[in-house]
Image (cartoon, rainbow, N blue to C red; front, side, top):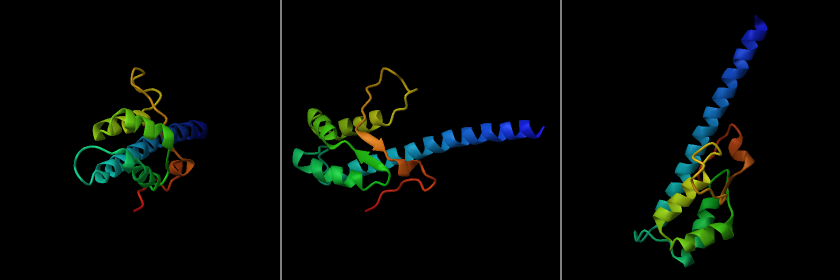
Length: 125
């Protein structure tokens, strides 16, 4: 009976870990979106080429997130700097492997190992 109880405990723990990872991913996604939205200080819904470096710097300040700078810069410029397109880039980067396979995926944002710890991630300003 104790083996069955332990197996149930392991199953419950695995389910809890999956849920915690989903919650953490949602938290990181929210932080990324907030950084992008707050970066648009002139409210023109665009990130100009000269502003991308500062946006990347601010993204890197989010605990547990790294950005592939050249790929991000290229995608932003291809999208004309549109905030909506940048938000799509972020969303697509955060898709799970089991999400809709037809969605465009990008590896622009990388969750660092520290984000998987129990400390979680938070934006530093």
